[in-house]
Image (cartoon, rainbow, N blue to C red; front, side, top):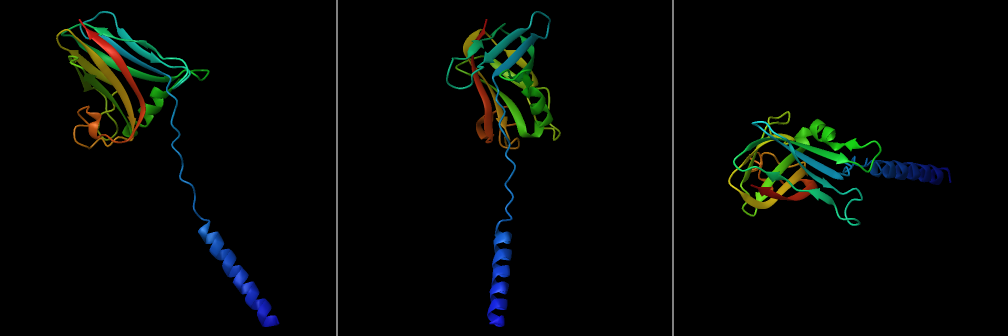
Length: 188
């Protein structure tokens, strides 16, 4: 009887150790996506003049009320200094997501994509700690008069070494879109 009790105790201890070893999976930390309600792009003419501010604001997030968009009208054949801000205005006080993007520069990149014949190019003026582009500051150059879509895109964890990504082409970037805004831009 003593041997059976010893064997049962031994088996119970062995079973408990086995279960504890299986339950040693720590959950991976979740990178909580920030809510971005507002995107503000400021175009300041290099030769002087008033800044043009394009804004996208959707305080209630996707669905619900339509976003309020102020589309940019830029001068033809002009160079602009560009700055981009990302905000969460559903918080009080407003949360400046731009600060987080700067702090995690290696994990983010802003893209400016001109489509539909818009004569617009963008060059990066800032970079992450690895010398790869970030895109919160840059230079925009307009060509002749045109109209089209200007997409501003913030991608989290892009592959900045992929073909074309460092030059501003998001096609091979991968990662996840934090926000995508389509402005109807006019160059005149």
